[in-house]
View 1 (cartoon, rainbow, N blue to C red):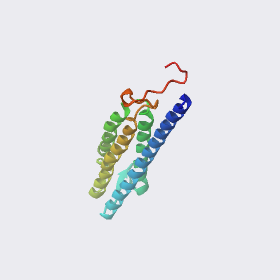
View 2: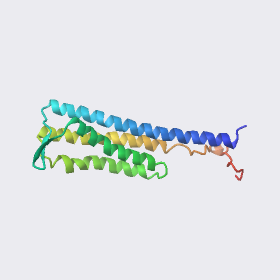
View 3: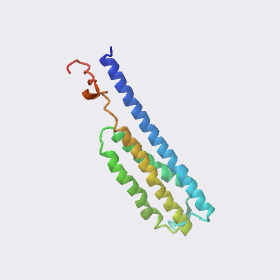
View 4: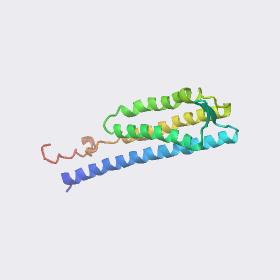
Length: 172
Protein backbone atom coordinates (compact mmCIF):
# COMPACT_ATOMS: atom_id res chain seq x y z
CA UNK A 1 0.00 0.00 0.00
CA UNK A 2 1.31 3.40 -0.93
CA UNK A 3 1.07 6.01 1.78
CA UNK A 4 0.75 9.74 1.33
CA UNK A 5 4.25 9.98 2.81
CA UNK A 6 5.62 7.77 -0.01
CA UNK A 7 3.83 9.88 -2.61
CA UNK A 8 5.16 13.10 -1.10
CA UNK A 9 8.69 11.67 -1.06
CA UNK A 10 8.41 10.70 -4.73
CA UNK A 11 7.00 14.12 -5.63
CA UNK A 12 9.84 15.82 -3.77
CA UNK A 13 12.33 13.55 -5.47
CA UNK A 14 10.92 14.48 -8.92
CA UNK A 15 11.10 18.15 -7.99
CA UNK A 16 14.70 17.80 -6.80
CA UNK A 17 15.64 15.95 -10.01
CA UNK A 18 14.14 18.75 -12.11
CA UNK A 19 16.09 21.37 -10.15
CA UNK A 20 19.23 19.31 -10.68
CA UNK A 21 18.47 19.03 -14.41
CA UNK A 22 18.04 22.80 -14.62
CA UNK A 23 21.48 23.23 -13.07
CA UNK A 24 22.97 20.78 -15.56
CA UNK A 25 21.28 22.54 -18.49
CA UNK A 26 22.57 25.94 -17.37
CA UNK A 27 26.08 24.54 -16.80
CA UNK A 28 26.14 22.75 -20.17
CA UNK A 29 24.89 25.83 -22.01
CA UNK A 30 27.38 28.10 -20.28
CA UNK A 31 30.22 25.63 -20.92
CA UNK A 32 29.38 25.14 -24.61
CA UNK A 33 29.19 28.84 -25.43
CA UNK A 34 32.79 29.87 -24.59
CA UNK A 35 34.11 26.65 -26.11
CA UNK A 36 32.47 27.51 -29.42
CA UNK A 37 33.36 31.20 -29.19
CA UNK A 38 37.00 30.44 -28.45
CA UNK A 39 37.15 28.26 -31.57
CA UNK A 40 35.64 31.12 -33.59
CA UNK A 41 38.16 33.51 -31.97
CA UNK A 42 41.08 31.18 -32.78
CA UNK A 43 39.92 30.97 -36.40
CA UNK A 44 39.74 34.78 -36.51
CA UNK A 45 43.29 35.00 -35.16
CA UNK A 46 44.45 32.43 -37.72
CA UNK A 47 42.77 34.49 -40.46
CA UNK A 48 44.86 37.52 -39.46
CA UNK A 49 42.58 39.38 -37.05
CA UNK A 50 44.51 41.59 -34.64
CA UNK A 51 41.58 42.26 -32.31
CA UNK A 52 43.09 45.67 -31.47
CA UNK A 53 40.97 48.78 -31.10
CA UNK A 54 41.22 52.23 -29.59
CA UNK A 55 39.64 52.86 -26.20
CA UNK A 56 40.18 56.05 -24.19
CA UNK A 57 42.90 57.14 -26.63
CA UNK A 58 44.87 53.93 -25.97
CA UNK A 59 45.23 50.73 -27.97
CA UNK A 60 43.38 47.82 -26.39
CA UNK A 61 43.11 44.23 -27.50
CA UNK A 62 40.39 41.64 -27.20
CA UNK A 63 42.07 38.47 -25.96
CA UNK A 64 40.73 34.95 -25.38
CA UNK A 65 40.00 35.66 -21.72
CA UNK A 66 37.88 38.67 -22.70
CA UNK A 67 35.96 36.60 -25.25
CA UNK A 68 35.34 33.89 -22.65
CA UNK A 69 34.32 36.38 -19.95
CA UNK A 70 31.98 38.36 -22.23
CA UNK A 71 30.42 35.03 -23.22
CA UNK A 72 30.10 33.35 -19.83
CA UNK A 73 28.98 36.16 -17.53
CA UNK A 74 25.88 37.42 -19.37
CA UNK A 75 24.86 33.92 -20.42
CA UNK A 76 25.27 32.55 -16.89
CA UNK A 77 23.18 35.38 -15.46
CA UNK A 78 20.44 35.07 -18.07
CA UNK A 79 20.22 31.28 -18.07
CA UNK A 80 20.26 31.11 -14.27
CA UNK A 81 17.50 33.71 -14.03
CA UNK A 82 15.42 31.84 -16.61
CA UNK A 83 15.98 28.48 -14.90
CA UNK A 84 15.07 29.79 -11.44
CA UNK A 85 12.13 31.98 -12.44
CA UNK A 86 10.62 29.44 -14.85
CA UNK A 87 9.93 27.09 -11.94
CA UNK A 88 7.07 29.37 -10.86
CA UNK A 89 6.37 31.52 -13.93
CA UNK A 90 5.76 29.69 -17.20
CA UNK A 91 5.98 32.94 -19.22
CA UNK A 92 9.67 33.38 -18.36
CA UNK A 93 11.09 30.97 -20.95
CA UNK A 94 9.07 32.32 -23.91
CA UNK A 95 10.13 35.84 -22.96
CA UNK A 96 13.76 34.70 -22.57
CA UNK A 97 13.56 33.01 -25.98
CA UNK A 98 12.91 36.46 -27.46
CA UNK A 99 15.15 38.58 -25.24
CA UNK A 100 18.24 36.32 -25.20
CA UNK A 101 18.82 36.26 -28.96
CA UNK A 102 17.93 39.96 -29.25
CA UNK A 103 20.56 40.84 -26.65
CA UNK A 104 23.17 38.64 -28.32
CA UNK A 105 22.54 40.23 -31.70
CA UNK A 106 21.92 43.74 -30.38
CA UNK A 107 25.28 43.85 -28.66
CA UNK A 108 26.91 43.49 -32.07
CA UNK A 109 25.55 46.94 -32.88
CA UNK A 110 26.52 48.37 -29.49
CA UNK A 111 29.93 46.80 -28.94
CA UNK A 112 31.41 45.39 -32.13
CA UNK A 113 30.31 47.71 -34.94
CA UNK A 114 31.42 50.99 -33.27
CA UNK A 115 34.89 49.63 -32.37
CA UNK A 116 37.71 50.48 -34.76
CA UNK A 117 38.65 46.83 -35.24
CA UNK A 118 40.03 45.46 -38.51
CA UNK A 119 37.46 43.72 -40.71
CA UNK A 120 38.51 40.18 -39.76
CA UNK A 121 38.35 40.96 -36.02
CA UNK A 122 35.01 42.70 -36.36
CA UNK A 123 33.52 39.82 -38.34
CA UNK A 124 34.92 37.25 -35.90
CA UNK A 125 33.53 39.00 -32.83
CA UNK A 126 30.17 39.46 -34.57
CA UNK A 127 30.13 35.71 -35.26
CA UNK A 128 30.80 35.08 -31.56
CA UNK A 129 27.63 37.06 -30.77
CA UNK A 130 25.67 35.22 -33.46
CA UNK A 131 26.86 31.84 -32.11
CA UNK A 132 25.17 32.65 -28.80
CA UNK A 133 21.74 32.67 -30.43
CA UNK A 134 21.35 28.92 -31.13
CA UNK A 135 23.19 28.01 -27.92
CA UNK A 136 20.81 30.15 -25.87
CA UNK A 137 17.74 28.86 -27.69
CA UNK A 138 18.70 25.20 -27.19
CA UNK A 139 19.36 25.75 -23.47
CA UNK A 140 16.09 27.59 -22.96
CA UNK A 141 14.11 24.96 -24.87
CA UNK A 142 15.62 22.28 -22.64
CA UNK A 143 14.51 24.26 -19.57
CA UNK A 144 11.05 24.72 -21.08
CA UNK A 145 10.86 20.95 -21.60
CA UNK A 146 11.27 20.43 -17.87
CA UNK A 147 8.22 22.61 -17.26
CA UNK A 148 5.97 20.45 -19.43
CA UNK A 149 6.04 17.34 -17.26
CA UNK A 150 3.09 16.20 -15.16
CA UNK A 151 2.67 18.04 -11.90
CA UNK A 152 4.83 17.18 -8.92
CA UNK A 153 1.73 15.83 -7.18
CA UNK A 154 1.99 12.70 -9.32
CA UNK A 155 -1.63 12.84 -10.48
CA UNK A 156 -2.61 10.51 -13.30
CA UNK A 157 -5.85 10.94 -15.18
CA UNK A 158 -8.81 8.85 -14.13
CA UNK A 159 -9.12 7.65 -17.75
CA UNK A 160 -5.76 5.92 -17.33
CA UNK A 161 -7.19 3.96 -14.40
CA UNK A 162 -5.55 5.78 -11.49
CA UNK A 163 -6.55 8.51 -9.17
CA UNK A 164 -4.66 11.53 -7.95
CA UNK A 165 -2.96 10.92 -4.59
CA UNK A 166 -4.75 12.00 -1.45
CA UNK A 167 -3.52 14.99 0.44
CA UNK A 168 -1.40 14.29 3.56
CA UNK A 169 -4.27 15.51 5.81
CA UNK A 170 -6.77 13.18 4.21
CA UNK A 171 -9.15 16.03 3.30
CA UNK A 172 -9.27 15.07 -0.33
